[in-house]
Length: 550
Image 1 (cartoon, rainbow, N blue to C red):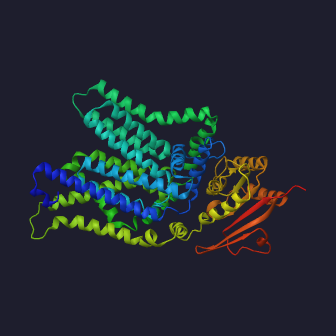
Image 2: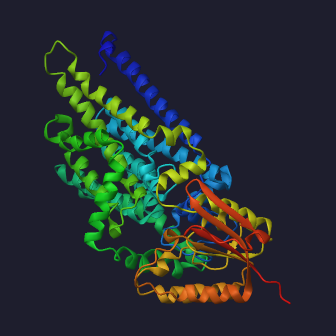
Image 3: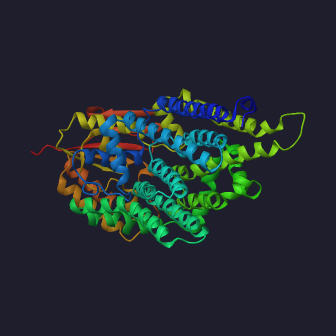
């Protein structure tokens, strides 16, 4: 690809060029890692807090869904448990685990794009994914489940391509197993399973004559691989006695959850989120849209038209269930965006080589890409290089005040004033407090905004949460007066608020007020300092201690 390689014999040219390309990939991996290392200590947000708390329970021998309820499939909890078991039960350990996940995904994208197109496209793809997956617009430094879906999905797709080329039966099985792992990390991983299954069928039925026995064997092995992770999950949870709760939360209630948003509201949310995500890197996304057209004017692209277009379609569908379109959901489309960017730049370079000119115009696409990549880094240079961990957490949510930094100090107070066997209850959606304090929850409802939703289980869930807290008799209550922790709707049932007011007055004393006044100022008042203090903001955390029995 690079002109000065032409002075070498063909085999040496290839060896030398691949050495250079791999050097670029390693440089990209280390560049992204260097930025992530600066941000390892960013406080956990609530999804990370959920995963970390569930992982912590697993490490203590407590199965998911027993003491904490969630709609997520348990693969992400097992992944967190593995990371924390190796790297420690801290935000730093969790984000270091994400660093390795991200690095492996970058390498996987290089291998996938190189296999489909060429090594130049592969380098462009992994650089694109590296910088886009770091962006605060997709909450890229937070270890969301989407990162854990993408890694096995890309390796599974890559292995399937290799299996189709070689015909080796075991590779079909391992490809399916990896894609099955992607699914148990998050339900949206099923779209990558469907994509690869359709691609496999298309490749099989394009060959003539159709070899039914071989195709059946390959498809069966792939399908068995896909099913095994979920089958094992069901068996393990059944043996742990939590299968019914697991099924209710991850499928029965999840269906209600994804049906809450209207199409119109979802479309408006998508347009807003797309603008937010694309905004800092418009040229990179423009290259991706150009990449969608490559199969129509490039010979190599034409060979992979079904793969390219369907990969894009199913990646987009993966962010659509429920029409919620949260920032981190867009991580699921970044691999195909990166791949499309790579093939757009490489194909444009190749096309311009055909034009005779006094000027080396064929380097223009690569130059534009480098400028776009540099702009994406510069756009977020303050976030990447200058902010403290707490400031970086605030930056990701901009005008929305979230109690993620404050959760650390609250948890430290709780941990210092309780024993290991004491229960606590967070009345709000801040599960990271359970994780930081290393204390068991008095209720399985570690999120409360689901209790505010207009869904048929809302009242029953509130009643269950109240019963569980009263039965567990927690030593401390933490009440979260933050809108994003509740998402109260106009028609929300207010039972739990009415109950809490009476419950804390009868059984608890106020021992802590955390007043989140602005992104730059939080006032902490503990024990005797709470007397006479009146919060100045609408975002407050209250800490209550159980009264001593007289």
